[in-house]
Image 1 (cartoon, rainbow, N blue to C red):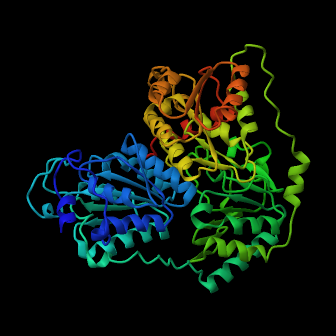
Image 2: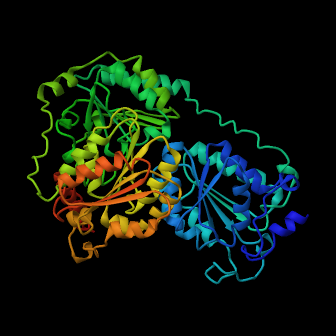
Image 3: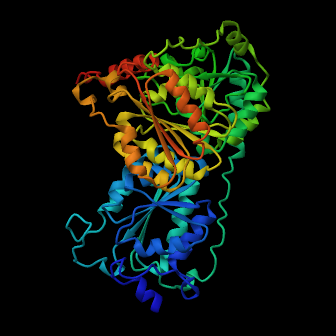
Length: 588
């Protein structure tokens, strides 16, 4: 019991070296959790240490397949786990009780909204303190320790409070497997005195999960395919629109089967960008109502549309202004299909449905031919004059030229949403943004997590100055982790997206010396390079350096632009969202 006594002690972490679990403690809760994380595909865990999670962190560090990445704050650790899950399919973060848990919860709520399985692990109170009348630090001063748990119940699909070793194996495995099955975050609280204690349930390696695949109700599937095929085969100019739930349904391959077999034009909802290959011959762009890609109006003029995995909220519908008629639409959700105003078929899974439907459709290229008749290639930005102040559309012209299958784009909430939507993604180029939750500052942590999960890709992050000020600290963690992302900090002096929804003095922020800040964080340790650009020539030179001699460094390029230099799409979208926000109360 020597190891147990040591790991359960209250000694200050600096007073004794971290105990590496050896043969005497291989059958411990801490080792089981570490092995389980590696088994499901997590090789990096984002953490902030606190006294309740320190012994657990010792066991995670001791696992050869795990890399523990210390973040500057819990919010960014959660955002990093979110970004990691977008690339790897699952992410994990470790924080301490309540002060850490309530700090990370905003990021976990975002992961919930985006259907990302993030395992949020919290170091909890000593198991002996549950059920007593004791007051503990890191609480709100009440002997009830359930406040954190109650908060997480709203933003996770399962919660496990592990304060008893007899049940710990089942609780941990049930929580992790449920998160994977439901593609939602899980909350696991582990008492601080338990990670290092041997227990018979942990004496062997974790048996790999067998997550049984979802199988459609065969009769329901056949009925749904028959109804949808009849609906579409009588249409004159049908189209297909891909949505964000393609990811959670794991139906991208089946979506392509449908696109190839049908001959229909293929558009993508803004929050689905990156999930539909833009090199497909029938791809026509982003369908986003009034701010769609040019000529995507063929969607609203169609007599039948198949929306695959859509989310219609006030942002994606441009203030509820889409000209979509329910009776013309087939909506395919991860486990349900609804045809027009008519029948709805449950327990019919998206991938099964799309593959089966592809075999029943008559090829119909009418809408595609109409699109090609009216299509005019987009214009190019006006050429800059020498020393002319840099324009945002010039910046994105150059970012477009940087994209390849070895890059990934992270778009921060703001005008970057609209400018990045216009980028044409080459095959295998990654693309992520957080549209449903829209938490400003998300992209800094997400860039950290995505780059860690996909070291073979160079991440190009487009971040506004207002958003950057929320979460800037974890540039430090990127440098410390040896990452080589390119961050374009777009400095226009405020919260531009909010200016276009509703302006006021609160949208103006204090200007920072952003490159000076990053240089101070760099402090000569690790590889980091910064540049401040005001003209196209300076931008061209900075990109050449970032992709050339500094290709193995974290590159931070501050781009100074006019405060009113926004995309035309943001102007239109902002006015419509403002109109939706300002609707008067319905008469009583």
